[in-house]
Image (cartoon, rainbow, N blue to C red; front, side, top):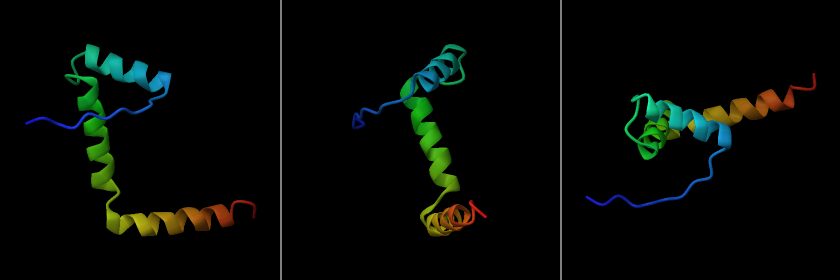
Length: 66
């Protein structure tokens, strides 16, 4: 099965971290790291939670100067 190819811009410090984790065998490849990170994020920040998260962030921002 062919997977679509995408390009993303990643800060240099993150690239170094990804490369180190691939080199030490924690992951097989850079795409595997990215896919795992996205899967982890999406599992913890589902669509149902997103609206609540945005509301909390807005409220925190409104009260930041208090």
